[in-house]
Structure formats: structure tokens, C-alpha cells
Image (cartoon, rainbow, N blue to C red; front, side, top):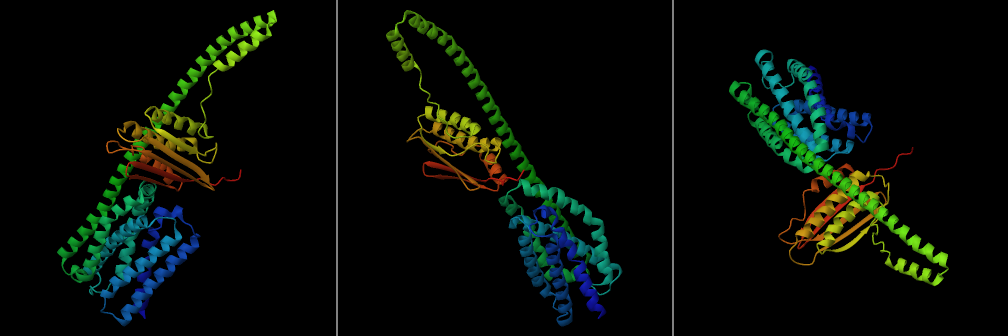
Length: 433
């Protein structure tokens, strides 16, 4: 009975802290109530403890079963976390692998001290000294890893894509396989031979450090890409401001010239009125009306900022001989700031304009459609290209960042001599004032 209680308590206390630790990086993404999460973790951890009790009673020498049981319980925990949190599988997998490596370091260190100074039976993995040693090491090291997961991994989840996390998972996954193999085959010899144990701990520590070195490298690369995108967006905004200033200056000059001409026209018309020459006045007014230039500046959409930037790039594309087919439905104040909209529209139309400008052969064209469907904005831009032009440009990272910010997506692909860009943005729900 004492052994059953000892194994159960040890199995529960030595698993629950690690699965609670897995919640730290994405606790803000919880989509169920807190007590639901803790109830699921507690219930599954109780099942883990019950398994160790039953296995010790029914199959005391079948430690090989633990490896398969651990994998099954990992999958159960993984499914629970996917249910409780709004996150993607690679990000959760990375946390599981990191915490699992940390748990192994704590477990092996505690067992070595236990087997060296307290428990003579090296096969006994649930002794009270071993349990207390583990909890003591946890008490000392837990705050550091808690802070590491909360500070660095939370930032990584916001800055890195799912693809980056799949790549980051490769190294810890390999170390996990090595650990499972070592635990199944060599662990029984580890505490009898210090060299085997030292090599095992060295592998664990090396893997644990490697996880965060690769994570830090990926974060630095993401930060560099983000800064480059911010600089490009700043240049884009400055270019728009300069263009607006030039347009304003041109309008002022045109207004001044028109006011000067209007004085002359009024003087001539006043002279005709004084002379009572209605026929000459009518003829003069008709000639004046015909001489007025037509207003060909047709707005592309109702959003002034987007309209300005799109017409700017389309003017350059038209000068290079491109045929334009543009239909954009975009009013003002849709719920996405104009700065973010200009990043998306500006980069896509700039890339399209640059592509057709550099095109040497074939028909040049730009086709675009933009529509609002419910709470979603969909933009597509197709442009001609050839083998000698770079259709994508360098603004795709900025567009992708805006799409992820609004829970959307992007696609850039080349089909033959046509480069296709598409963006989906989810418009945030308007909160009542």
C-alpha cells in the first residue's frame, strides 16, 4: 500500500509542473475557461500516475512499456492543448520538446544524486528522496525557465511564422528521439557507470542550449526582416508625402494661373456686356467652354490614400505601355488603418508596375480586383512578366506581415508569363462605443 501511494504521488507531482509550464508561452491565447484547462491537465496527470501504479503492480519488470505510455500521454496532452489554445501545431510541438528536454535534465540529475547517496535500488524511480530531489531542483530552476518561456517564446510566437517553427522543431525532435532510445536501452546502466550518465547529461544540456540558440538566431533574422520592411514602408510613406506635396504645389500654381486668366476673360465679357453685343459674348463663352481641359482624373476607389498610391504606380505602368483593367471597391474607414492598406496596395502595385516596366517582350498588362465580402477584404493583382523581370519585388514580407496582423493570408505565384498576387484581410469587428 505504501508503495502504491508513493508511486501515485510521485507520478502526479513529477508530471503536473511540466505540463503547466507548457501553458506559459501562449496563455494569452486561451480559448476556454481557466478551470477547464486545469481540470483537463489534472485529470490526464492523474491517469499518468494511475498507469505507473498499475504497471508497477502488474508488470514490475516491464519498464519498456513506459516509453510507449509516455508517447501516448504526450499525444493526449497535445490534443488537449490544441483544444484549449488558439495556436498552431508547430509552436506547441516546439514548447513540448523544450519542456521535455528540461524535464529529462531534472529527472536524470535527481536520480543520479538519489542513487549515489540515498536509494540503493537503482531501478526504483519513485523513491521519496528522488521525488524530493526533483521538486527541489524544480523549485530552484523553474522560475528561470518560466521567465524564458514567457519572455522569449511569447515574442517568437508573434514574430515567427509556422514554417519557421517547423524548421526549429527539427533539432529538438532529433534530440527527443535520441533521448527515447537512450531511456529505453541505456538508462539501466547510466547510474552504475558515471561516464554513460555524464555523456547522457551532456547530450541533454547541448540539445537544450541548441534549442534557444537556434530560436535566438531565428528571432534576430525575423527582427532584421521586420526592420527592413519598416524602413521600406517608411520610404513608401515619405514618397507619398513628397508626391502629395508636389501635387499640392502644382495645384496652387494651376489655381494662380487660372485666376489670372479668369481676370482677362471677365474683362472681355464685361466689355461685350457694356457694348450690348450679346452675339459676340455668346460666341466668346462657347469658345471658352471648348478650350477648357477635360477632367480625366477619375478616382479608382473611395479611399483617398489608397486611390492616390494606386494611381501613382498605375501612371508609371501606363507610360511603359501596360494595359490596365482595375476595379477596386474600397470606401473610407473600413476598420483597417490607411497606413496598413497603403502597405498592401502600395507594395503590390509597385511590384506590378516595376515588372511591366522591365518587361521586354509580349503584351504588358495589369489586372486588379478588390472587393469587400462581409468582414473580409480580398485583393488580387495580376501582371504580365517575362523571364528577364523580377515580378515579386521586395515588399512581399511587408504585405505578409500585414496579412498575419489581420488574421489573413497572402499568395504569390508565377504561372507562365503572369505573376499573381492575392491578399486576404479580416476586418476587425467594430466595438460598441
